[in-house]
Structure formats: structure tokens, C-alpha cells
Image 1 (cartoon, rainbow, N blue to C red):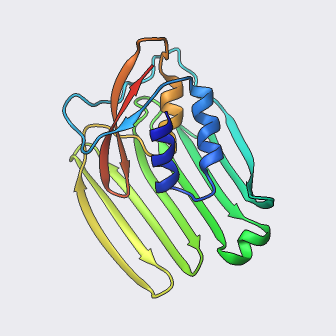
Image 2 (spheres, rainbow, N blue to C red):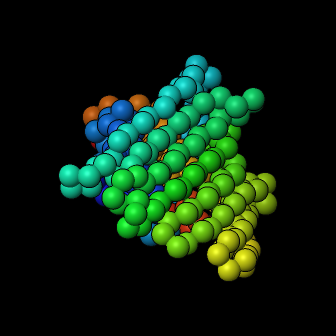
Image 3 (cartoon, one colour):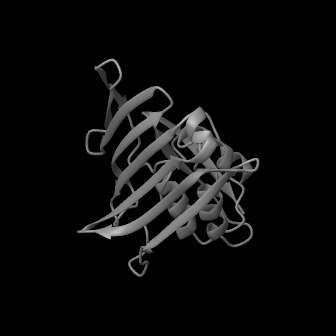
Length: 204
């Protein structure tokens, strides 16, 4: 579990580690570890017809040494016929004067399959300002990412291959929490972040 927590903290928000730890704690005591690329044995298990997506919000105050460093949140809720997952990270106090962070993450998830459909990110970290949008076309097996550097008014687009279903670095924790995490359970599932799909091995 430590490796998955470290991976997520490095890829999403600098202030989001306590939120990630909280969601993983709610998921159980699994020990995921990232692999290099997505393979044929990796898959997302669709939720059963009796599964009900939670409506939850985690709010954490983050400290750096003796200082209040900011606030991180993660929320999952129903949104029309889908599921909406959001996460934020906002620095405060002394750390905010050194390196301000104001990040927003949002993902739309298909409740029938737990596949992530699209992701939007706004990253404001120090002098950097970026907007990122990612969409997944599972019918074509392709994903599309657009990155806009707001500081220099520059954008770029790219297309990448995807497996039949992927989760993301925030929704993935709720996916893990939906699994039957009994001793001996294991599963490998594909997780996409910024166009790169990796296999995550979960073992209880």
C-alpha cells in the first residue's frame, strides 16, 4: 500500500497525500505496487448490480513541520447518470508564500463499468499554470490528452492507446474500496495518468 500511496502523491497533488492515505485506509489493508505497462491480464472489475456508489467527502488539514500547509479534499458523488470524482489541494500559511499550490482534479466515471470517461485538471503550482483535459474512447481503444500552458499561452495535443477500461489516480482509490478485500484477494488493474497506462497490483 505504501508504494501506491507514494505513486499517487507524486502524480497528483503535492498536498494530497493525507487524503490518499485516508481513502486507502477506508479501502482496507491491500498492498498495491505499480508495474511498467498495461498487459492483457489487467482489468477493471465492473461493480455488481447491488453495489451502490458512496457519496463521500474527505477533508484534510495538511501541516508542514510546525506550520499549517493547507487543505486537501477528495469527493465522490452521483452526477446525473454518472459518478463525479473531484480532488483539490490548496496551500496556505507560510508554505503558500514559498510555493503556492492550488490544484483541481475532476473525473467522470461510468457507474456500470467503473471506467473513467474523462478527466480535467487545473494545476497552479508556484509560477506554473496548466490546464489538462483527457478523454477516453473505449470503442476505438484511444485516449486523447490536451495540455495548455497558461503561462506562455501554448497548447499541445496527443493521442494514445488504451485498454478496454481504465481508472485514474483518484477514482482508483474508490475502485479499490469497492473490491472484496478479504485476506488472499489479489487483482491487477489498469490506471491511466496523463496518457500513460500502468498496471497496479493489489494484494491483500
